[in-house]
Amino acid sequence: MLLSSLGEKKMKYWRKPLDADKVKVPHGKVRIIKDRCKGCGFCVEYCPRDVLELTDEFNIKGYHFPHAKNEEACVNCGLCELVCPEFAIYNIPAEELEEKDDQG
Amino acid sequence: MNEKHPMDYLLREDRIPHIWCPGCGLGSSVSCFIMALEDSGLDLNKVVVVSGIGCTGRVAGYINLDSFHTTHGRAIPFATGLALANPELKVVVYSGDGDLIAIGGNHLIHAARRNINMTVICVNNFLYGMTGGQVGPTTPLYAKATTSPYGNFERPFNLVYLAAASGAVYVARWTALHLRRLTKSMTEALQKKGFSFIEIISPCPTSYARRNRLGDGLDQMKFYHDNSIIRHGADPKEADIGFQTKIVVGKFIDVERPDYHTFLTEGLAKVVGERK
Ligand code: SF4
Ligand code: SF4
Ligand code: SF4
Image (cartoon, rainbow over all chains, first blue to last red; front, side, top):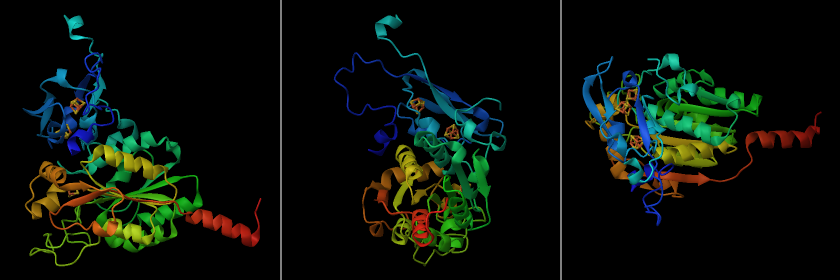
């Protein structure tokens, strides 16, 4: 219950709208300032779309930082940006996805 | 590190990365605070942040507003001076339980009693984190600290009950995981006139969790996720926190009462007449 409410500000999707098939899906991209990260894993755990995972690489301070394993799934909810204690990750809106057909 | 983060404009970037431990919830609370500052619509030139000593006491040094890092326990008296000297300011005290409840506890109850116009954000990690994990008046019964290796046998303060009983007009409690709700409460508190109080239960992997074998910051966040009960309007008296018990969160108090400055100006006007 808590999780669904975490992203409520920008992502009101727990009740599916009737015109869901016509509405454009908000889509985002994540930016990671890897050398600020301390590898706490909060963003990975609480991203509602399971976009992130920690890499095996080390940053300058020796921490494993996250990367987007499936950025296509990002809904630009901003949760990763808010939960990150290090100001190391943020989201930006991508061009909104048109109907799948348009994507070819 | 010249990449920019959208919140950097409210941070003293040259001091980032901050000193807080990996998995500490303090940084998450500051993200929420920055969002709340944006949402509040306040003129940020008139917002002041005051901290005392401790891990949370560093917040004043990281926020890029007029901010003051005061002596241990004395953030509230300092903030009271600011609020009275310039009533146009929105004064925010951002400090920890050791600073606000232990060392400065007397200041807290009297600022609440007088209804001084300020917002107090108290990050509660249940002990003195920075100085090495000593027991404090917020340590849950039976929890371990460096100075209570067999467990703490004192009954702790219930902070929301303390603030409410002392006269705060706005009282809320959230954990560091309730990001949106915490942001909303911070926004409401910033917009509220009078003494508002928000307690944030926050992971402290280095001191509290380590002494009590509770795992890392993420484990504590998962505990909050599974054990928080949202109960708006609950009686703060019923919101005691025990060692690893359920945590009642929500907005407990939101009432209107004239603040000290209003009483002062109206009272004075009656006695000596309006001054030009
Ligand atoms: S904005 Fe962040 S938390 Fe939200 S879906 Fe995208 S990666 Fe996940
Ligand atoms: S929340 Fe921030 S510090 Fe933690 S793993 Fe993600 S990017 Fe790194
Ligand atoms: S000692 Fe605890 S409260 Fe202080 S920075 Fe470390 S984790 Fe955070």
